[in-house]
Amino acid sequence: KAGVTQTPRYLIKTRGQQVTLSCSPISGHRSVSWYQQTPGQGLQFLFEYFSETQRNKGNFPGRFSGRQFSNSRSEMNVSTLELGDSALYLCASSLVADFSTEAFFGQGTRLTVV
Amino acid sequence: GESVGLHLPTLSVQEGDNSIINCAYSNSASDYFIWYKQESGKGPQFIIDIRSNMDKRQGQRVTVLLNKTVKHLSLQIAATQPGDSAVYFCAENMGYKLSFGAGTTVTVRA
Image (cartoon, rainbow over all chains, first blue to last red; front, side, top):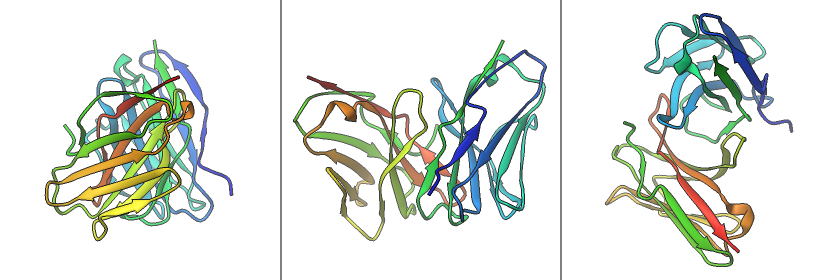
């Protein structure tokens, strides 16, 4: 069974640009959540999608958005990039929406903003 | 900060010895916990989980202990190997997200 796939693995963007990251969950998983990982803040929750609906959102500005498609694949978008957005962005998939079962992570997308 | 925290940021262990990684949580209503291992350049890898109706759960070379009285979680790794060198995170189910501790970096000495 394939794991969680995130693309691209690496990105370099300039301040002010926007970026779209993609996540394909494990087959059969309908919940996808996104996290930002930085050395200073650790793993911070961005948002969670289940059945194409955003159920929960973390404490991030509106520049961070996402969506989920009918096949459960998810994308997140960051607009007007800032240097502080440089981070490893991780997505996790799980079977159910309430985080009461195993959540499996992808390899992440390393975003560098210059 | 988040409600889940680890006691020590780093742990150095002799190869072959047992490792114990600790984690404290603050939400007494939390009912599900996960330990993850993250190697350099990779995403967190699921190791083992435990529910609040259990005190102990064993996997392959790993054991997780849950003490709800003092809201403490630990991960024990038996016969630590070089491949166990990584950052270990505990995560707590908050119902609407997983909340992660800061992580413990385990270094295995040959």
